[in-house]
Every structure is written in structure tokens, then in C-alpha cells.
Amino acid sequence: MLTRTTTAARAVLGCLLAGALTTGCGAGDTGGTRSADELLEDANATMRALKSVRIDSTSTAARGGTVTSRLVTDLRSRCSGRTTFSEGGSLEQIRLGQTDYLRPDRAYLEQWKPGGVTGEQRLWIKTPADSARPGDGLSSCTRPFASFGKAKKGKTSRVAGRAAVELTVTDAGDGGGQGGTYTFHVATEGDPHLLRVAYKGADFDTTTTFTAFDEPLDIKAPDPAEVLDSQEAPR
Image (cartoon, rainbow, N blue to C red; front, side, top):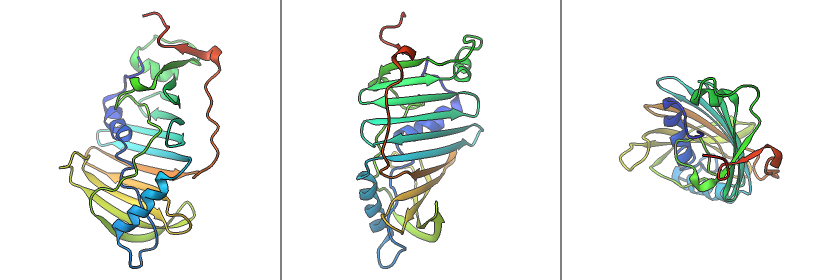
């Protein structure tokens, strides 16, 4: 029931879940004598060392349909977020170690079975995290933050009030990647955080932002009274 999405959403979310939007994440200083690849490596190390981060993404498919998502994560085993589809509906997720708690709203369920749900939908479904599959709208708490391709320096800008340098990587798609162009905006004030990545491809465009670096996380399991265990539910 929870693995159904529209065709456009599946194409967009497949990339999100594969981590392609955050692979090759940005770097460092305003340029100086350091190469773009060196700046990327600095940023990769900084992002991998984070204890927590918030990730917001908006993806628009070339054939129509937009998916927005918000995720707060410790980049290891605890995260929570919401994915919203322009075609209708949203899906909330809490992941705690090996367990997912999922809450689709009424509009999301209507996409799967019109007329099958009446009234407000408040129940969470408890399911093993390892049952998640690419393209089903679920998020992993982890991100690779690993470089790929050849980076080029671009202009400087300000992102979320911080000075940043743009680093562009073009993926030809011949190495198993998505293909397309990634522009990484990397902080040049303070730690070299990745602040934003803009992806443009043949099938969809995506903008992803990173904020709330190392802020405390308060991620808890839902109220047991509102949880349905998928492994105990009648089949």
C-alpha cells in the first residue's frame, strides 16, 4: 500500500533515495590557489563529520509533477521528514535504527485507492526499515558526500546569509550516474558546509538546501496508540 507513487514522483524520488543529489558535495574557500576538486574534498569531510543536518528539496519532473521533501537527520540511524506530491498527498516518515514509522495522509491513500479512506488519517504504520526500496518515497538517514567528476569554479554568491563559491560538475551519465549538471554552493565563511545544490537534467530539475548544522535532534517514536504494526496486521 505504501509503495505506490505516481510515475513522475517515482522518477524524481529514485534519484533522491539514491543520494545522487548530495553526492559530490561542495567545499571551501573563495577560490584562492586551491582547485575546485580540493574545495570539494574539504566540504565532503565537513559534511560527513556532522552530527545532524536539515535537508530540503524540491524536484520538478520535465513531464510535470513536483515533489518536495524535508528531512532532519543525524546522518546515521535517526531521521524524520515529510514528502509532498503535487499530484496529491503527503507521506511522513520517522526512522529509528531498523524501524520505520510511516504516516500517509488521506490524499496520499486516495491516490492508491479512491474512496477507500474517509475522515482524517492519523495512524502510523510500523515497518522494518530494510523493507524500503528505491522509488517508494522513503528516505535513508545517511548521505554519501563523495566527489565525482571534474569540478569547475564559478562565481561567488550569498546563500542563507553566508558567502559561498559555486562549483559545477557535469555528469555524462556513462558511469552509472543520472547525467546532467550539478552546481554546488559551498560556504566560504566559517566551516565549508554545503549550502545548496542545483541539479538540471533531462528528466527533472532539483534544488536541495542544507541548514541546521549540528543542531540538537528530538526524534521520537509516535504515540503507541496511533501505531499499526504492519507485521501484525491482518493480510
